[in-house]
Length: 255
Image 1 (tube, rainbow, N blue to C red):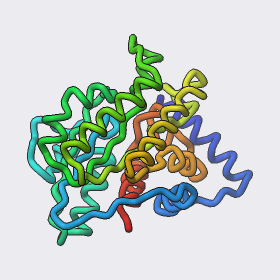
Image 2 (spheres, one colour):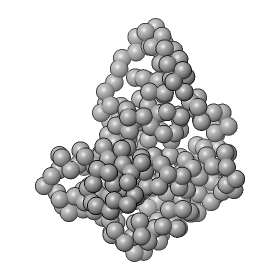
Image 3 (cartoon, one colour):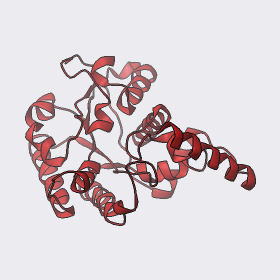
Image 4 (cartoon, rainbow, N blue to C red):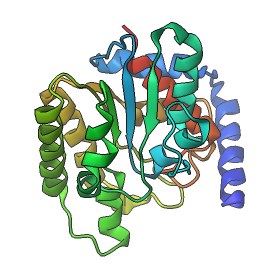
């Protein structure tokens, strides 16, 4: 992987030097992606309970036995921690309570299996979901038989269940993303994976959720540095990739 990363970086620098490519800052990348999408944003209120949910990208090696609110170890080392640290510092007066309950490897049906304890009982005012890459990926590399219909149906059932118990919850749905040509993400992903991205977008619209266009964010970021700079394997973000995602998440709650 180290060799592939170095090679990708060298090829990028060669191409960039020829084309005279200008580097963009992370805020500029994110702002550009959101401007193109014109997506709904979510407002944060005083005393909000914010819950991050998802798979390994959200989990980010959090300490799962730490139940403390606003705990660094409980929030992991990824985008959820980075976004939370910004919120808690810059909006100290809001008394926000932030949890991360992502679990590595999860698909939507596995969220549903733990939803009462890891979501509904926390009574979140803001629920952020990033789920879907495993619903597709595991159909390629594991004996998982789920389809795009499974993903749609399971996701809608989960949100219906959530809205029944928490009718006023504000939803944020992250777009599943993949960076092609890096380790785990090859031609076998496309065009099928794009259906999962589109399904998340449609579900966000149908449920009045804020939407984070992560694929567009990562696509635009590659104009500044190659994909291997932002993600290790096409799916899991590097430190820079997590910062990119955190900035996108924070953009989704402006307004």
